[in-house]
Image 1 (cartoon, rainbow, N blue to C red):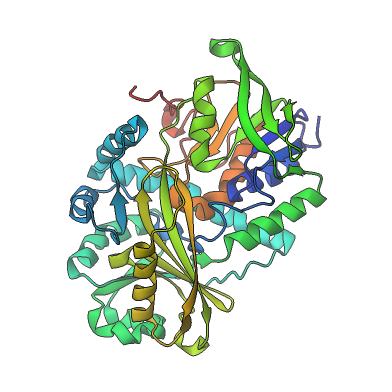
Image 2 (cartoon, helix red, strand yellow; image 1 turned 90 degrees about the horizontal axis):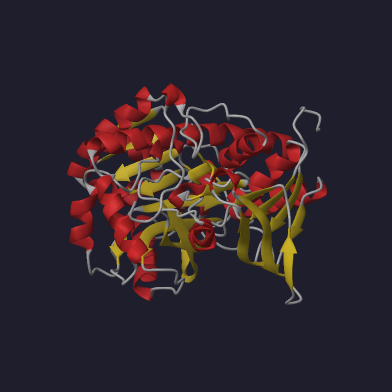
Length: 446
């Protein structure tokens, strides 16, 4: 038993992005013996490496919303479209797409927003506590997030979502164009094109890579065993029904040797790659990779660069100042598991950033990056229990892994320890508020 009266368990966490690293941190704090398996040479080397940097609680609307289907049709075939859907002969992609369309109704969108905001606010408070406890430096700013619109209809359509956010306790205020420029003077160059905006003063930004690597170091010092350069090949299962258990995880170690690692509990936090790992043991997740892009520019004129984190609605880009760098990220390409850079999409990011802040950065030497966001149709992640007793899920966070990361790690540590987290969120496999139960991940086509 640990000091909180919970039986001490050996727990293996699969994945060392922000989700897996936060899971390991909180599992260790709960008194468990924790090992993290990661195929890369360090933490946060894939999807958590170079995202947009926003902790965007109040701007967390799901991609699936009533306006999405028409926009996707309009964007089909456009290489620089904010959301590019490339049809592939993959059953998962087609079923995922149909499930996405089902989530686009007003009622489902409102329900999903409530869930996303609940876990995101819980996560922001947890991040603040971790920051205070550890002193990790990650270029964080608490200057809010400013969402601006260059299309009058899009601005008008945003007003109901902003009202819903305020009803949920998020101080997201809809504002006029002049107020947008007052809050962020660096947007003055496009003042005549701005239709309006909304601003949430308590939202944050910061470098997820710096945070995650810092938290990994703190976790290792506290006793977490990180095994980098170690490839997970499969999970071994025995038993059926309620008696089913994972008995070991097979890995290839840095020397190329196959090993079986055993634990009392296993937490899967492998993002888009969770699906293929879990399917052979009968756990089928509705997750499809969405390839996101980012560009990082060196700031050459600090006075011309933004200091407030921004969301450019028309181009679906987010902009965050990270010390002496400007990070611009966004767009989504549904095209399998490839991380190949599309030069057209990269050029579109730089072109738009230069339009917004023509004198701010060195645009001749951008650093481009892609990462595979693990998208669920609803944008609600799988956090909780699977149908296998000792197998837990912390995956499917889509574009909000940084926003939800610390809260998801804290929540899964509670669940593994046999407790229900103190947040109004329908955790996978656990009773939800009001007596509902969110079903375990269903099989494809079910």
